[in-house]
Image (cartoon, rainbow, N blue to C red):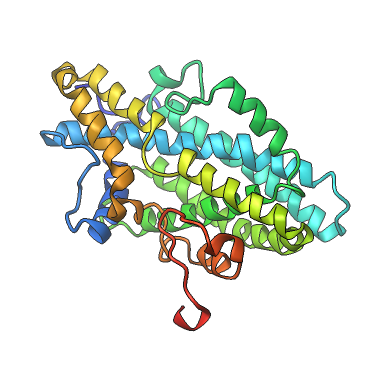
Length: 306
């Protein structure tokens, strides 16, 4: 087994608590009924602990990737539009807070795992150059492609849910991890509100055909990059096997278990549900372009049923 992730500055004692175990317990209590499960079957508390530590690093990488590749570029592009000064000032503040979040989670990962993050911010999340180029072009056109505002709303509301869950945890968590999510949560509250204001301003500005195209592209991106485990999550278990030679023979089985989660509705509802992202799903209900789609965790409701 690899050493515990050290998150205290040199000279202070202590090791990281099983931080992501708490988030897994929160979701598994809801969907699977047994706390502390991991998506792959591991033998022994040490292996489960290390898996959860590595997955916590991956979780932080997701935030870093999302805010640098989508959030900040979308906001920069929107700032080139003529907005009333109060909204323009909100956009500038929004972009600056996203930049601060990125730096905060970068520092946290480097502090926790300097070996993995000595020369890169993204160890598990790797996007091919082609998709990087396509995304860079697409996010520079948020007025005609407001699907990225939908993604921002969905992911920031989801982040709020899990940050609140971390802070409510009855088990003490590592202070640096808790403080990062406390700060992130404080900003995400008004980020969600700004996302909604931007959607109100832009979504109906485009025609029905373009709205339908945006919704379908959103559904594809959600499943491909923000849904059930795929490439990056497989790298988490590959890193675990690299650190734990006794697991290497089980790696093919672990990969199959991880990929099988794409067909596990109970697991998928721990990613997105009306409990986790109520405002986003309520907006989907009001948009025929989204009601007609199959989206992870989403089942349309009429207004009277909400």
